Length: 463
Image (cartoon, rainbow, N blue to C red; front, side, top):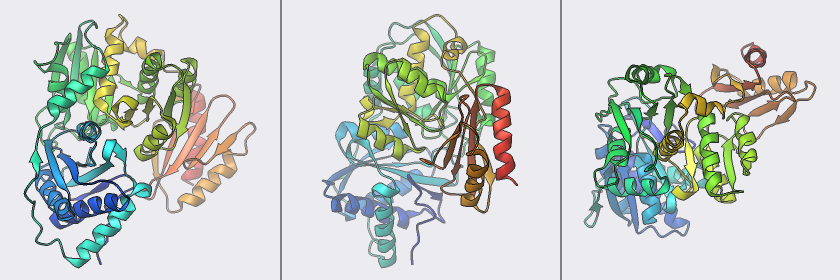
């Protein structure tokens, strides 16, 4: 019996090639994707697919197309693209979409991010579990073994259209000259950045781009394309200082996340970027809702409210953020993992649009980036600390018992366990969806308070 539970995750498909994700699995998932959406009453006569620079991506895409064709859909193959370019295609063309990427995972991995027409999300609770079940049944039956791509599919690059659309959303024409170092990590940022920020067919921008690792290479020869790990932004930090640059930008493998480095070579908290972009969007759309996940800094909802917006707290994860954005018609959403979501981008996440907002904010005033983002930094954070545990539920109960009963503490369990204190300090502990880990985030009004609360929580978790 086929079992895809190891690769069908909470929000996407992710596995090693070819032992977990191979041609047969891709065919089954393509057919199951179409059948599941059609079974829900959606028109799935046509879908759009794109892929990243991994060596295995083009072949897996062809197999997925064969499965989708077998289920009765024709396919627009956009070929190379970033994940947010696929979301652009899904939104602009109003088609369901599939993006082949394993994001920041090592070279032996690949995966699929799926969405409904209009870039609406698909996760475990919104269709992915059913897609998995249908795909397993198709693998068991063997009926797709001889499936091949059918006649009538199209190929069409969408990079220029995507770039032109992004440039309509933020005006960069009047900013001061900026020197920008961009580390694409050999991922899809190396494909999209030159067109979005430097296409000769678009109005010229006052930007000097210093490229790093723009060569598309799914073996990631320079460093992993995961800027969340500090070691992977060390080259960029050094380059910003060496070039005397105004800002550094680092994209992950599929370029849907963007990390920011200031002129000193210091990393800027994604919470500060969330607050900065939120104030810009609220300036255009007053009194709007802004979504933030529950491990962003406490400064984020404070600043949203001060800017006249309504902060709404969400669980961690893009399917939860997107669902909340759609429910509340939020203008913007941000996660501490550097995913940024925009109403005028079909509620989808796009690292590139966030980067353009930061460039516009920086270039429209004279302060260096470090001084600009200081306006959005109010607390001291621990960063995410992962601890292997054998009994996630038991440890959460212990932390709740020992720390949740403190004077003035408030406890909620929207996503794992959050304990908030009257002095502004808080902690959140969440079980991993895929590993026997607990993820701890702590924030406090001072380094001492943060460290004290962090150490108390870790003492319980690691006892």
